[in-house]
Every structure is written in structure tokens, then in C-alpha cells.
Length: 273
Image 1 (cartoon, one colour):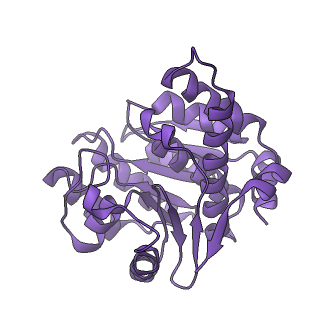
Image 2 (cartoon, helix red, strand yellow):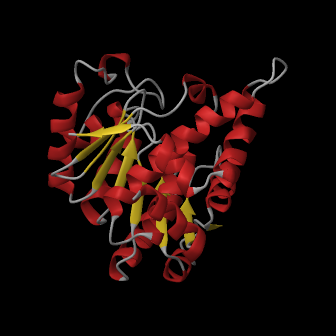
């Protein structure tokens, strides 16, 4: 199943519109290229609707939010909805400031999202309408553990039912769920946390997977999360004693480029709740 998701991206080469943050924009573009898609980055209000109309999916990331891009996000999201294209939201740092939280909630109110991907603190903030994060990282009090997994899955399914979106909560254990089914993914490596933007890259890649598999968004999102985790493992295996987090970032992108469907299928570690 996950093999088919990846192979559809390679075959269909979807164009993905990214309104993303300038800290990670280059890596997001490269990860979309590496997985088999084609990226375009545009955030000017005078062209975002036209660009969205050309693309198979839209990825909205609020990581470096500013008042100029908020109207662009809303306009692009509404255009994607009109054209029935998948839309991904990455609510980076929701809960860290009023602007971020209010903007994320406004986006949820005005745009129908196919996938919402964030850490557990960001997702809890969206569900509650307020919250706290450690900058752009999850609050330690919210971390998903084996003991809390089933309870968190219930919460994530409930939020999926509320929003109509697939919810992807990423962390040490990833949870990707709609209102009926949750994939609990165990791929990945702790060193991924030492690289700025692995989550942003994953959101961009998820948009590519959703664009190539619009009829199976839950499985597409789960496949993207597994793929990113496997590539984090593969990249770590490649590190030499002289390599650090900069090399690790590049090795992750290399691993995404080299990943094939059989490897994704065989190395994906998950269970369904």
C-alpha cells in the first residue's frame, strides 16, 4: 500500500505550491524534488491564486508568519478548496504567540484542510483554541509515550472528526489519523531533532503524496511520515565520525531521493489503532 503511494508520486510528479517559512524554504523545495514532485514557492497576494490553480496541492506553513502573507495563505487556501485540491497546514509554533494561534485558527475556520501536521502541542493548541509550546517544539508535558498512546489516538481521531482533516502528530511516536483509524509510526531517529526544518520538509512532502494520491489521503500521509522516518534512519546509518547535523540534513534529502517503494514497504514500522 505505501509502495503504491510513493510510486504514484514518482509517476505523477505533482506540482506543489508552498507558502512556507524562509528558514526552511530551500530544504522544502529540495525534499519535494527528492520525493518525485515539483515545488513552487510563492507568497505574494497578487499571484497566489493563479499559482495554486496550476498545482496539484497547496502546503501552508506559518513558521515565519507576517501580516503580508496571512491574506495570501487565506486566498490560496480558498482557491485550492474551490478547485478541490489537497491542502496541508503546518501550524508551526501555534501557542507560542497570539498572532500564530489566531492565524492558525482563522485558517482552520476559512479553509478546508486535507492534512494538518504538527507536533502534539501545536495540535492541542488548535483543538483548544489556546495553548503553550516551547518555541516551535512540543512542550515536554505533551510528549506522546507508550503509556499515553491510546489516549492521544482518541484525541487525534476526535480532532480529525471535528476538522474533517487527516491529523498527523509527529514526535518520537507519530500518529496519523482520520476519525476512524490511527497509524502509530515508530520510524525515525532522535538526531532528526537536531536539524531545523525536518517537520517543514515532511509537510511539503506530505502535500506531494496527497496530490499524487487524492483518493487515499490518510494512507498517503502515513506513507509520507514513514518515508521521512526511514530516511532519517538511513541518513544516520551513513554518518561518519566527522559528520554533523549539516551533513545529516543533506543525507536525509539524499535518502528521500533514493527511497524506493519496496524499501518503504519493508522498513515501515507501524500499528493501527
